[in-house]
Length: 229
Length: 221
Image (tube, rainbow over all chains, first blue to last red; front, side, top):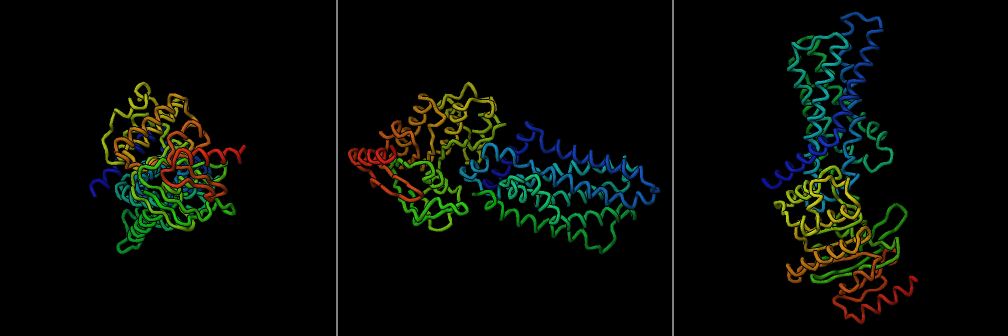
């Protein structure tokens, strides 16, 4: 088990090294999220909406922008593997698909969380919203949704990576499957922003945990067949 | 070492391997020959476990497989040393700097693989294949990007590995560059449209090998 985990750690380190050299995925995530947030902010500012109405639509705009920017940016996640056929090199070295999947899941989760936090900041400035009273709770929602998004996007990016239309294919297949995560994130953020706390007994945190578990189990089991010819 | 029974593989409507059966023992050096599209690369990828078969079975006597191909199976943005360190660590080994000297890579160890010449990239690919002291060495057109010196290094590495293991290694070569490697072969297997059409059998005599190679060359002239 220690050996199995040490391989995952080596792969996580490899993912960081590749991202550090190319600064590709994180840059793309942050640029997409910031640009979309600024555009949305400009659009809402020009509309005739009062402060209360803007507060009501803030969570929805946050989640639409986060999901779209994440799903479109993740298409670049396997570029390095495809260029040098790194996946196959790792398979030859005895690395399992599950180990590759987990390492990518960890790294993408962190990148998505960073992107989410930047997006919350930019969008709250653009829409003149104060989220600081509920920031720690929103941060928690960000962690749970980033892991769910990452669990699904890593698997789907591997499936889409063999297609010539991967730039189109990934968002098209990812967005419908990410709907439960969108709904949970939206509902929880709305409750936090509008009421200052989550409603007691609300099903959304449990639904989000279930989505995390389902996507992770699917990814661990299906990543290996997805990357083999 | 490996046994394939009635292995078939198709890419869509194109049948690449057709009920192919082949058994390779330790100590054998098999030269796999055939025209383009005969199924040599697919057969090697199938043996390596990189490609799934549609039907039939494959039994591998080892998990230590070294695969050298015109594909590098490396990360272009990482340096030579980082690549070799990564593949050593995931194989459960510490990085052995003698790999760099064995393949004349000391001078480029800190350069990103993508910035190297094709010849040097191929050497890194070969070094990667030898990290885990493979017991089954698969070579898919390994000499296509190599100059004479690099080819000699590759053949020396194979010979060294065979000596170290005292005959416990099997080698399967797929190449068009027959004259460079024919002297090593202990067996010739001729593939045509995904099936074995001629086979000298294991540890064949030089006379039999030359005869099969001669008739193969005659047919493909």
